[in-house]
Image 1: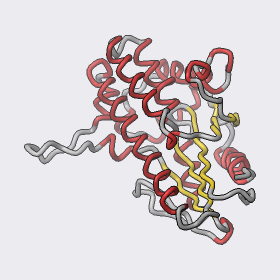
Image 2 (image 1 turned 180 degrees about the horizontal axis):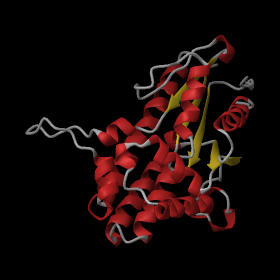
Image 3 (image 1 turned 180 degrees about the vertical axis):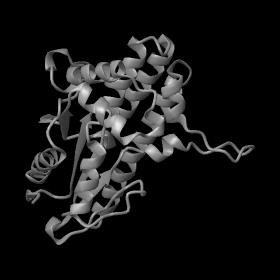
Length: 263
């Protein structure tokens, strides 16, 4: 049960972080299902339950559908699978994908935050808990960083993405209160990726997953190496959960940390 403070309208955001294949989406689907929500094709999941009392629980999975079906130009009727293009040819599509990824992630957080603010004008006791799959922070310091250090994007492209990121985090809707990091071995996520057999992920090598794992460790675990001090903002709380465990156990631990939160 989420515990409420006596403060007025409150917005609280938790980001579920981790490598590709660590179980983030499965955990969020399970959370939505526990509270009676099953329409996973929607871009935002809004469970409803008496157990949630006076709280709006909003779950935002990664905007995968937007990445695999970018709207076509007026002259074409065929959408573009940008995610697949990025994995197949990162040198050509890395910058384009990361720019679009940050754009779609930001639209997610802005939409939910603005909706909360609008409702709060008429309900000063409104509590909103936003559960988000990944964040603009891991997008910047894990995926963009890897593209740059691997030589897949140019220096000027890296600078553009960094400036774009710093503009986004200056806005109030970019608030993150807590990160839950599913710390999972690269070999484990590689095996899971092979098992789920998504078409877009066919070209992902183990070496890439190892690099992404190391960037997650740098951002969420090895604090002396992270980039937070350069952002001039407080470092949110980070909860580390062993993602190598059975999914049921991982879910229970994530659920515990979400619903023991005081907002």
